[in-house]
Length: 83
Ligand SMILES: [Zn+2]
View 1 (tube, rainbow, N blue to C red):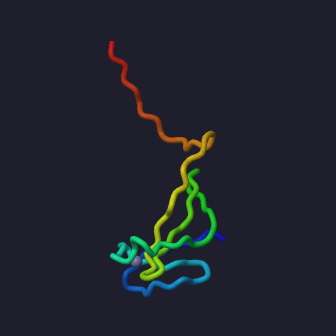
View 2: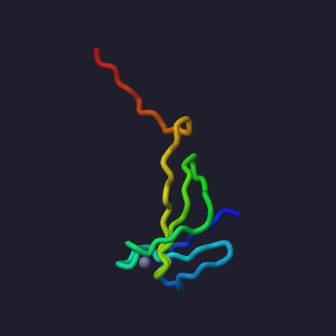
View 3: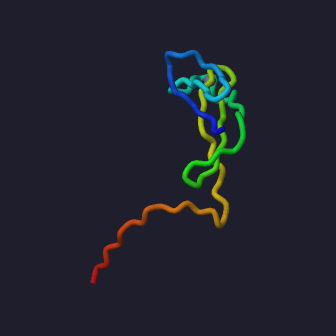
């Protein structure tokens, strides 16, 4: 089951079975207290895992570097040719 992160300042930061509740902004505690949570997820071809502050519960996605041959398809800019 994919992990769901809910950003909500009003709720207490709690880890539930299917969802993490995270404050919407990081606090001063978040610099050194981030811990990995759960396994590898994927969003639009990018792989990531969640890192969560052990103190306040602030959660961010930590994207893994794109490996060779695993490039994400991006919309291409239209090129204008000048002659
Ligand atoms: Zn924190």
